Length: 557
Image (cartoon, rainbow, N blue to C red; front, side, top):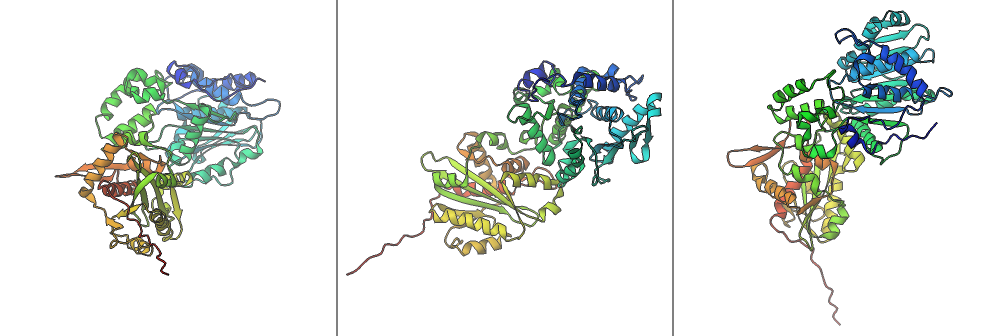
């Protein structure tokens, strides 16, 4: 058997040229051919005339199916490629494909009393996979004799091997104790929003340990908000494997997304490029339908527009797709630099510490903003803390917060005073190095921090704590930050947490000014970004460091 690689370094030209995104032939052609014969014979009942897969699908589907089943060594039973990740636009028959793949696995599987699993995030999504599978069985008399459908428990049983295909909804059913060796995860992006999804997936896929023929398939569309949790992890990993940054022969990524150059020039808005992320164009999805839907959706608010682009064109939602976004967000990523706290302090002649937040259901954000000695460029390093209770109170962002914790941008604290201690230590270090101009903060609700800073001599009386203006009074800081990001005179540490917070900022005009608020109601957080604005407020005044007095000993004798 020849060597193979699951990377596809030329995917950008391949996807534009309508070529396969799978860069190798099936490892075991006979296995692939057998599985394809079964798969192609299954009938798709929601299409007029009930055609078979072989009659109504294009080669991209058959390539994917062949790669899955063609990776099974018939002599040893080992599945040489055991993880498959496909990200594709909505309306490309994804759930029907899921049903067909797992039904094929059930039909040709050799293990007796086996369990195959389709794990869906909701009951509705579970139905989207189970119903087509059940209909495929009922549409074929031979299959009806071979397989027993039980609608009430979403189970299809092989009458000879007694193996079962179960469709489980993660929001109602438990995956604990499952022994499935062949698993398909549908709509991974929804699971990415759940705090405990990672543990649930480990439980669901645990049966693969004792089943060398096992595999797991992730089928998903893009998220309706920036990727998070297990979805983000798998998406990032899939891109790294595809691009050759990670070598993993057992993981096959198939990502229908726009190359960077098409994203940069917004070619996804051109109907002539709709096919890039819609390989089933002309079959389950039509160009005319997408044009009509785009015409309707793009005239609505920015959130609706972003959701349409994410779901139907597979464009990842980022800062540039937010409603009424802060203009500085357009320049944020361009000014990312590899800055640590120590680097900021080493290069700066003066520093301001901005602090914001601190409630038990909020983030406690901090930014150290330094002015570089030679260039006078502003250098920003940010961090945030969150109390453990935030993970419970803000479950919709719990998985995202755990991502930031893993990145090192966020610290989850158990004791509500641990965040205060950490902030005091950072302020103390800046002060000890003779760089501190002041701590800029909204004094409201920060009594504990003010008291703790007083113990190291950082007080309002010493001029080292300044109340930062809030609301519309912050307009000058917001505008200054925008300009300095645009002209490159403000650099930051590239924190993913800060990128998220910046993307959450919504600018609202008032009668005489503007103010920054959260981009959407609910759990979006901007506290660390507001800490940056607090620091900018003071740095804009061209402050000097308030150095500790130095004493000289005079010896008389």
